[in-house]
Amino acid sequence: MRKVYVLFIFNATLQYATAQPTVTILPKIGDVITTEYLHTKGVIPGATGANLTWDYSHALDSATSGTVKIVSATGTPYAADFPGSQYSEVVGDTLFNYSENVNGNPASLGIESSFEKIVFAHPEISFHNPFTYPNSFYDSVTLFQEKPLTGSFKLLDTTLISGYGTLKLPGITYNNVLQAREISASSGSETIPGLGVITVPRSIDTSYAYYVNGQPGPVLNYSISKGNISSINYLKSATLPLNFISFSATLIHGGVQLDWQTGDESNTNVFHIQRSTDGSAFTNIGELAASSIGSHNYNFLDAEPPATQMLYYRLEETDLDGKSIYSNIVVCKLADFPEITLYPNPAISNITITGVDTFSSLKIYNQAGQQLKYFTIKGESVTVTLTSMPTGVYIAELGNGSKTTTIIFLKK
Image (cartoon, rainbow, N blue to C red):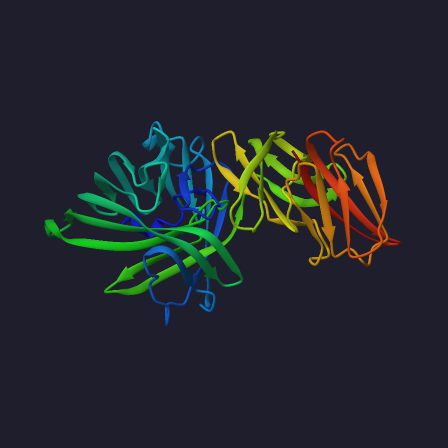
């Protein structure tokens, strides 16, 4: 039945965060997804629960792959059989799954190719947006098989968001992954020439799909039979709403300058700029409108970075359909010498910097890059009075010939 195609006909967007991911599934016309099948020998189903690590990094490719394209239903071979369909997932250029969005949820109307046709009595919704661990939902639908045989079946799909954690695949590791377990029960009858109507025994199929932010489909999908994996495949590559060509973070006098370049933008809406002090938990610090189409250069100034030795940045792009994709994470080093300490921070009337005996000078700059103070360093520490300076973010620059380092601090 249609569960054979479950990897191809859903498109996932997840929030990348340390907390439990939240998922919204909205297929987008133009997505192209390539999957690779793995050998099942020695591969076992992943555990369920919170904060897990699923390791399939050593699984072997079987050299069998598949491709699905999300296209407009208009102009496809069987669109007239599914009036109201908005788009179609095309599997291998021959199988068409006709779908629409119902109240913000992807819904299948039916499946057709040259050798088979399945029509749902009402749109089948397998995911209810948005969802997170440990949500569950179900949908029941009657389907009519019109070729190669005729018949009718009742399906009951039950989906449990069964876990989240880290997923290791051949050549790549994904963080903040959401695991979904789907159980599909079917029963019905078929008309067989020469035998008449026969009852098809009730069957129950179980599959698991793993979703991660920024990818247009499950990054891993497998079917279970008698407790073992009977088929397993993973996301090999995907065409996404845009291509991040470059992304950098540079410490300047005014704060941290973020610069990025995009290529092949399509339907893009807004960039959310996010910052982290540990590379894991990110918060939004600003946003910038996207250009919607083409290739562009962008920049953003983080004018109030926190006082720390290292900062991490990433970009979340959300397109006009609500789908999101994330950039890679870039690092900005704010202090090259960990033995240097500035305190108190935030400061009120003065600051003291210790561990500076290898430096000869100290300069204090404001966010505009204007030098406010200059000191000659003699000894292991230096104290600076701040009473004449207004509240704001400042940069302390230590220098000794070609060697410099900077520390950002806040004056209340």
